Length: 273
Image 1 (spheres, rainbow, N blue to C red):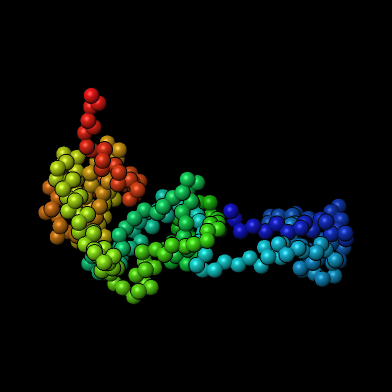
Image 2: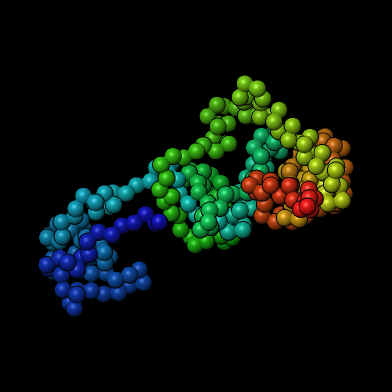
């Protein structure tokens, strides 16, 4: 919900008379008590002018008036398609500068109501440069909501920054590093592509014609009966994938890591006996 302020209404004040002391503006209904203080309807005017006895605030109302937001607080917004595209490409510059995937591009997670959660500082960093007069909207409606969650999980970039790492890929569980696991995933996906080359493709460019991560990378995908599934790899691995080469990659259909199960749909179903 929006950060909510619902203190007692000014009209409950014993010195308030609506027929004599109210007027309308573009910003809402303003009210005045006989003591002479003006305020937006719904906000206790005793906070503005001590001459009016007003209505005493209980602790709950007082807490709402003092509501503040920490930069680490979780907020949620409804991203536009433009906002989602910015999110997906937010690490392009970092990956290009390092010459490898430091942070894997991914689409934002959207809940059942269409909201995506961020820490407030993270939202400011990702979208601040796009939020000024004359630019396309990154969220709609133009409201930031409090997500009211207890625990905030750190993002991939948070971990990199916290440990001062250029590449979190060397983190290990004692058996494998992230880099080991990514390499294994690449060979497994190459096996799927090569065994299903008739429905697989690869390209050095995204569907919009722009080179993947500014060059040096390619996208490879499999068109399953349930939709596409894709990964990005450095050009040095181009030869691992034996499939159709396209001048531009196919349009993203909205798939995320949660849709990896689509790959199972390419396996022929056994007929029931």
